[in-house]
View (tube, rainbow, N blue to C red):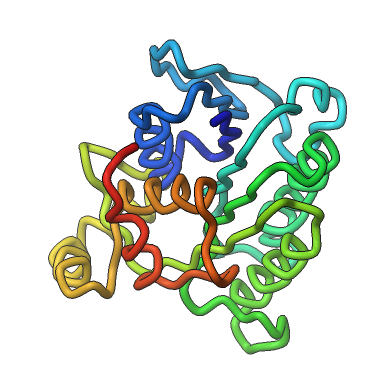
Length: 224
């Protein structure tokens, strides 16, 4: 399996990258990044671009992939709807559209959204509306399969830390709650999210939107 990965430097992205590199059936991981990751691994290739949402100039390097994992995102705190949408919607759809054209009908696209996303696009919460609009647009693109992950609380494992200061503080304060939520099945972990993405690329899932319970169900699968 050949995998394209966006957001590999983020908390969830780091977990996804680890699982991809550890999976025996993944022969190549190509990370599209703004700056080098500094991860030495023979399976890993990096494409450094200033704007991951504008990939037309390198579309010839994005062909021949089986899956694209997209845990790239930003916080909505302190942003207007237009500012938040520029990353959450515009960047995501720009990248996804180019990737769909470069891999017609053969690629599985997996996007990390969030619990509470508003599929109607008209609810009172700004971030949920934008996420819903993004999900709906992705599901209309001509992928072999497209899946939207809606995790709630996520526990970082293996020394992984978020690069966003607000998230680091929040997770430090909420750590006991996150651990309890994971134990009760109401939360998930970075490694389960990564394994769930790989399983979706391998065998799919009966529905396109997966909540925490579904992520944990398929994310507990042993490494291939």
